[in-house]
Image (tube, rainbow, N blue to C red):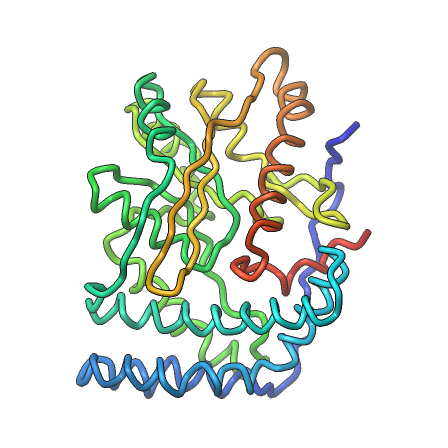
Amino acid sequence: MLVEERTSPLPPPRSHPPRFAFADLPAFLYAYPLHALLRCFPRATIWTVRTFGTPLFRLLHRSDERLVAGRMQEQLDLSADEARALARRWTGLCARRGCHRLQTISGKRGSEKVTLHGVEHLERALEGGKGVVLVSIHNFAIVSATRFLRDHHRPVLSVRRLRVPEELSRLGQRWLGARIVRIAEEALAGCEALPADDPNCILKLARRLREGGIVHIAADSQRAPSARVMPFLNGRRGISQGPLDLARLCRCPVLPISALFTANGVRVELGAPLELRYEGSPAQCAESNLPLLAAELERLVRANPDQWDRWLDLGVISR
């Protein structure tokens, strides 16, 4: 058997956060002073964050950067120098995503250049009239991809799981967590998104597909109810079976999508449909198709490891 059923839920990565943490400081600055200044001086606030925010963010998250470098070295078979360089870029992209959210909230998105590649795959898939499932990993810029498709008359219904940053202390989670989640929701304004804990989530996604629409799911969320433990990189990880279940029920194609921050904007890439098989029982479909999905998600991570948001929770499942 290639697919392993989980018999118990995955443990949280940090069951007992410390009372205080350095990560509380940038979270406080982001949630209150920067957000307040943005309302009054959007252009000056964004310039300040771009100029001074990244060095400060990297300084305050240097322990996370070292942890990510170690995991990249182990999981990608890299040298120590290569892993440190990638981890440094990863930390910079974390800060860039925060600045990008501030730009979105302020409405200052005019300078963002988004390029789309592989649109022919999406157009051919939509010709079947059965809808399309887009699957991705948690790229830092993935929200830009769905927003760009919406702006070009291809609305996408996404599943979002907004969460309190796990690196915060107990005090930070108590006093800052809810506000950070609200800011993240504000940054999603204009995007169609369903909460992952919506009891009718699957029904709403299936309805959109049967209308010939597009849905998007980031399938590397290992805490999803449908996650199954699979070989991934040099270890194991929970991969969501949800996109495959939707595709089987609606008989629609599944296309990989990635969104990458570039020097002057965002590059969105759409791949060819996965070669899935829907014969047999649901268990047989999962047995044959889930390894294909896991392999595609791993390819996306290996292609641009510095753009993947989930390095910090990679160690939840050991080898």
